[in-house]
Length: 154
View 1 (tube, rainbow, N blue to C red):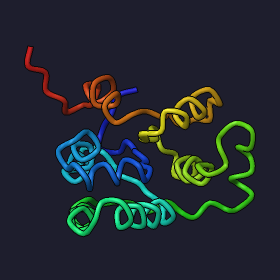
View 2: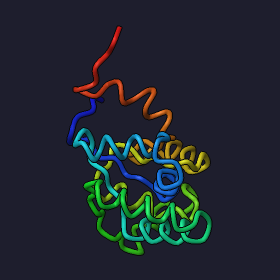
View 3: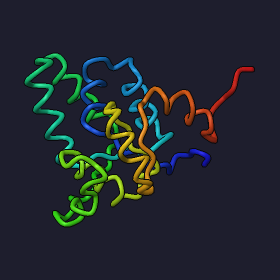
View 4: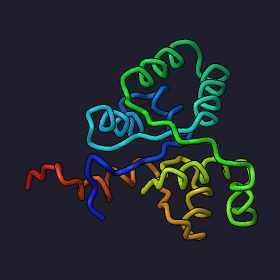
């Protein structure tokens, strides 16, 4: 699959928290790619609320301000709220606490679900649900070079 400006990437809370904590890391870099229009960034309302809560509880005011700045500069698209029944279809395949994340990613036909949760990555990819779950670093190394506008310096 070749990436382009229409490729939909769903970010989970862990990626957003990481970007707020370290804007120059992989998650922050990918959000900057979305801010420049190379990819489409998607989130859901529950993911945004979880992110804000965890940043406030664990990282403090400076990280919360960085998160607010990320929200302001990244043209996030909001996934619709999954119906409660839609999350139930993943029972036994994806852990219950992340079912809403997977359901939202599937609702918007995301090509990729970026997360730092290795268990979720395994669960999603084994279940073969139609979205590929990856760590941001693996996406940068293995998928981003297929972008139509990727410049190779060989």
